[in-house]
Image (cartoon, rainbow, N blue to C red; front, side):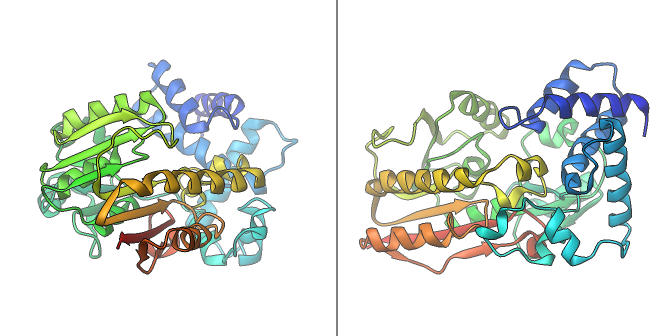
Length: 361
């Protein structure tokens, strides 16, 4: 590994902590380091995430550059099928020690999250085959329409197809949320925790840009990014509004569907975001579960009779999944619950995700 790559990766890791996520620090560092080649940028990104993925194996007393290089060696050995990593070792070292208090950890889950994540794309409705042919190095999903995994190394943000809004980078589990929501053209939907708008764009595509989508988030800067993304994707059937999750709603509209992709511990994304394994705490679990109940309670009046309420979280913890679903079902008898969907990284090749659907009677 080049000395420059090690130096920049070490600088990113030193500046990263709970309040400064590694992915954000990395983006800032790479944006300012204009002398780096595309290959060096890719290698630095891989080095940072590999360090956190193999953090449980590293000697914290060793110089940071040596730890980064050792993590790379471990990853290469693991990815080439080495037998040196037992199930017991992976379960105990790849994840924080407190996690078994809250969820069952299987060897298959621990092994899955040690691989680099796949890069999933969502093509425009019905265009996956044509997109895969133009991009090359792509494999179309046989389970989720319009989803494909990109296996190449090209910077897709520079592709004309991306700039023209022909595809979005969106994890397959996130795409499944839209498919389960199944919004229809002409309906009115609310993406209550829209973030930067990945699911808003998918809902719009499924609705053929007809009807109306309200997109809200507590952070105005995320909605600013959503605005840029919708312009590129030529999505016009939406309105954006800041909403802090309180009972003071951004609109009095009654919706055919409300999607709450709530803040969570993100256990299901620990393959893609390995630093979070070491920054999330047990206190976060309890606080986030309380926030999830608050968000759901506040949006339920906005679902019209016959309308859908959809709860999604990229975590596998029962505190945030089945317990929350049971709470809604017990405390809101006006909603009928459908069987929940649990997506596991080792099964889908994407993020872990829990999705529950209710219909207002």
